[in-house]
Length: 79
Length: 134
Image (cartoon, each protein chain N blue to C red):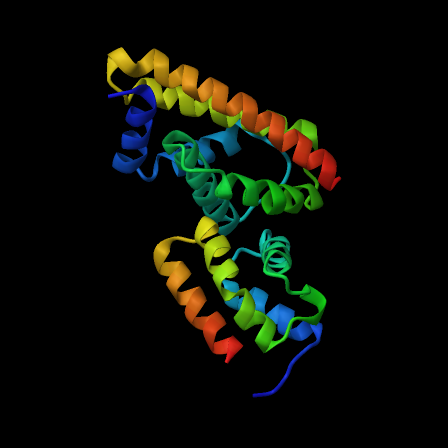
């Protein structure tokens, strides 16, 4: 697994989240921080750690079928 | 059945009601900001969750996340505390009007009073969150 630690990985999380561009950066940043992960330094391990918090947060914004698709993409990204 | 239970039942029976009210709100409100259908759908979905958890008394997770994420997002787009207060008022009045036509007559007053309290607190919290974000 390649360790990605730059902002491109954050952008990949944003894209995988299924959130609308309006709310995605604010929401992912908030959820990562809540999970104890620094957004600017997030890597696959950090994403793995944040998955439960991301699932709870994304469930607020996404319909169930969208949520399942987003979680599958995020789990793939987390390796 | 209590007024809040009647409102929860209505949201279950008519899952598109909040989306319809949001579209009518946009037409009335003329905030000047352009939001995509995806923006509106996701924020309305989250708002529906906040409304449901308040009606059911199950916490404030959806409400808290909206205040911490959607409010700063729309402020970054150009909304102000004043325009957000206007939006909340328009939405609340239109939803109360829709509810009056849809809940049993004996529960109408209680349901509208519940919504008045909810939207009063909602507008207050949105304005405070927008001030913090701005």
